[in-house]
Image 1 (cartoon, rainbow, N blue to C red):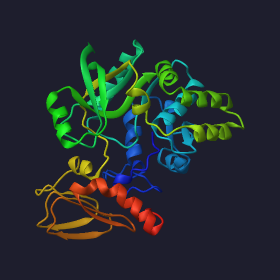
Image 2: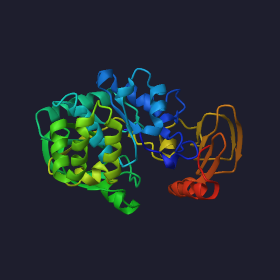
Image 3: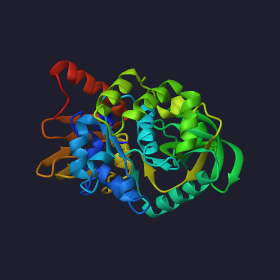
Image 4: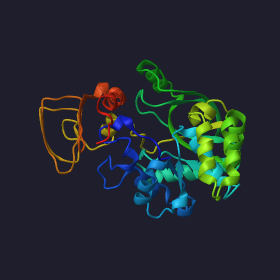
Length: 351
């Protein structure tokens, strides 16, 4: 899934070039490219499908030249993750009705890729013998308010696989601390494994209106009418996440509890956490930067820029081509509102 706009990473991530297409970590590869390379040892190249906005199709083709154009599924409208997955299911059904499916966002960080690949193979083995919707749950390392949580009910199917009791959206700090301390809750990674048959049954039961729209679309695949039929399906689709639409309602949801160094890289602070830091806990990414009396900051400058920063603590300092953000880390949840205000005042947040 590579269609999000990553507004919390403004000013680097914009509607024109969202974070999955950027080298956020300063590694030389974009997050999309890193995700692709992570799955190549598991999945044949011809089996990849990249679901993205029609706006970004050319960008995906440029960044993943090994992928053919018909492996890039271009959504005509943004409708959240449930329609995105229903669209992919429909294409997969036209190719292989016995498929096993891995659903992954294109913009996450995985530190231990060997362990990740091992866990994915274990998850595929699990769903091969069980009618299950499997999600990967991350052992929480702290009370985190930026993630959703999965509660287990103690029914252990086999080692690392447990029945899900509840899903909880992003909690406040007090609730997150209770979740963290209880040992019953795991972060919701947004990475899913299931068979085509299992997820199709779940759509019929819980989001049949979306399933029916793509059933109408199905006969048009490969015909001259395909883009028109797809657009009609998306116009009618409601905007709903797979978590809210299916995972919170289905009875056959399981969690595989894993620990491979995961972050959804949703905020500048999450980038700070996973970046190398200096002796004053500053994460310096790109640019030529001198710091004086500065602590616990994340600084991201263009490669050709020189920056001198004095007297700041717990700040985000990010410069893109035409934009500059200086914001206390504790207020970074307001960045989405900043981008809305910028569009209202200046017409665009793109740099």
